Length: 396
Ligand code: GLA
Image: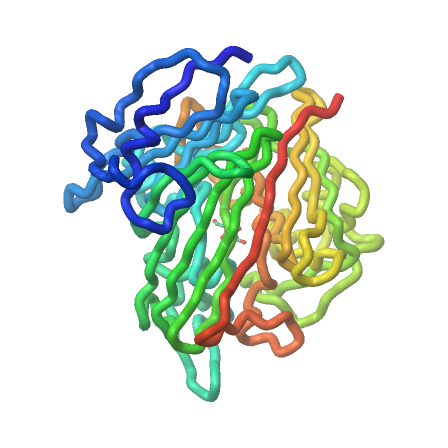
């Protein structure tokens, strides 16, 4: 596909030395320099534009990454959010497959449920908003009933990250950094977080997560993209066929806190070992389905811990779009947008009940309080490092 491209913007974007590519001499990033100059070449491209201003006047970035196939990924440094992802269907038509907004204002609204954001310091729930580490009790915000969810009141999804783009061996991308101070949202330790998004020329979105700390703490980072492969973001996702590479899942109580067991999926509505329509059993008369108001559970992934394993696949038969998820994480939260209620709209669509699904790769919920779960403690001198890939293609 012949492509229009922007190059000058790339040269103007280097803000600090830890970027992967580009030349230092073009460090000043003046807005007009950030606007595009059009050149018609057929290569991948990355550009920066203004996404809006924070209340204090700080300009927020929007990075647009386009690969050789025309696949386009948009990322803002507000919450390190994926705001848009356009991938081809079986007719080679590029459409947006993630829920979100066209501008910053959309994300600054009250009650935006983490659309496309990096969540942390601890993604998912922590029971009773507290945990004990090395004999010390840490109290967190109870922002989900009695429990703590997704890092608290002002989690990583609501902070401005430092950001810069790069062109690397594997593709084009954006590297984002957030320094989460000791005590932020009640967590111990100054945590330096680096998240790198790479868009490859074979239509994979790679997310690399790294973190280091100066005090023992807990970390569980993930991306909270809501996908809808139909390309019509107002449509329900019940016709999508999902496979989750997991023989067990993590059952929960009424407030979605794990009971501590790991339960076999066989014979339950949670068995996605074979591709199955999301809607087939989502309203089954089942206690766990009832607690989740549908699917809102963590699956225990098959495969060796820490290795890049196939976690899930999703196929939308009508469009032909196919997504494969690989991760080094031991779990994946499959959430079918049960809390979406049509009160939010963006990009020309109204986000009603179950119009998006999330596949949040992670350690299990409430692991700081669950001795039997894989540990989530990070200590000084250690590096937290996980990787997840969402790869897109077409399957007839
Ligand atoms: C996660 C949780 C859901 C919900 C969403 C955000 O996916 O598991 O219960 O809170 O985040 O709304």
